[in-house]
Image (cartoon, rainbow over all chains, first blue to last red; front, top):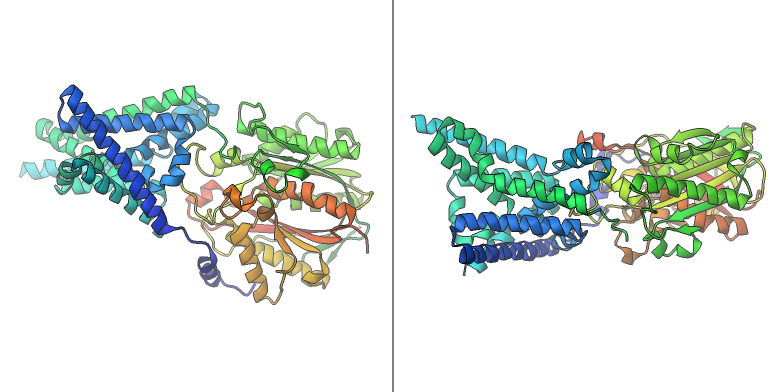
Length: 148
Length: 119
Length: 337
């Protein structure tokens, strides 16, 4: 055919429908902001009832959101919400929770060990690997700086 | 006032994520990794704690907050335990979240089944 | 005997007949515009099975049984099975037919598989190697999704260029003698790769293969697009169909008047499938349910069916490679002129 790889890439780029970027960003902003606002609300409730530090309360709020996200995943509705919320459910801790619960559910048919157990980290694994590695590097840096 | 800042900050972090998905070739998985790593870096530079003080959950709920908790944990552990803390700090601080996600996911997988999205 | 003509085309001098076809569609597919044409519409997509994979093989088996039933044949009357699907190692096909003592060819051509199998079956039937051949393919949204993309419950985002894997199966009986429709010719595609890497834009990746195969067929047979009532591509979807027209236009071939695409017929706009349908079962089920009766009655006289397939694996995608694609064409007609 007379068309070259570069020509074709150009043509495909030009004629493929584009994502509705600004509309997606607005959805992400509203949903993501809403989830964080709800997290703040949970944290304040916890402070009020258990009289603990804000830092700890924020930790519990995240865990509550993890619980809710996983429950919604199990009830088969998280993905429908995510379709509307775009990155609004992905970026908050809810996205992390869903990325563990969804393969756990999906791969249970391959068994509890080789399926559920092994595949649970198939999407979230990299987040833990690189987050933890970054924290170790950072720890090393501050440790070395403290020596001198 | 806290609620307003929580909404604005959390929303902004999500909107940036969406912009990265739509405008770059980055996959969502890469964006999450970048967010966590960025959280560690910004926290290490002392830039993230002020955001947490201002926005509360708006800064801790997005995955950059996960990175911040990792960095924060390492900082404290190194101060208390020295070299050993380099290794234990991050995992210890985030253990609650990770264990919760693992355990709840396990329970969910025992109770529920995935459903066809075309139904 | 089959006769080779031009660069890549086989002409059938005593054209084999497609004596019957069977189709099974998923629930969503059964809510689309082709609902009245399917033989079976699944009530739920697990079909009472414990896994999606088991459901898919049952679907493929059911479509084959339907085709046999309509032809008044049994598995014992079949000389060869040519079957394939999207799952690793073509397990849907091999498990679907393991209980029958019939010579079996497992094929992998991704979404092009049904054209590949029709072509091979026609060659076998006309050459005298077989009297009756069974061609069958299937795809299942859920089994494909978990193999190629993400878990079903994962809250991911799909781009507007992505295609929806159809839950569908189609089967055909190709016989050395019989009534219309007939397999008149076939053009076997070569692997074509124009550098597209985006697995969420498979239509664009496959369009060059379709353009090339159609171009080869027209040149080999010295015919023009207007000689055919319909040029039906398999699973290019919106983006791919547009690309196909664009690419052929550059070669001076205009098929815009009589082109349609299985990926655009299966669902309607409101069903939220982005750029359209795809999957090995999509083109097979559309051809088996919607097109076959029209060819039989003569409402469609002469058509070109061009099924396209994207031949990457999840591994090559992760390794950052572009998508090799293929398109096979079969010419089907009502009459023998």
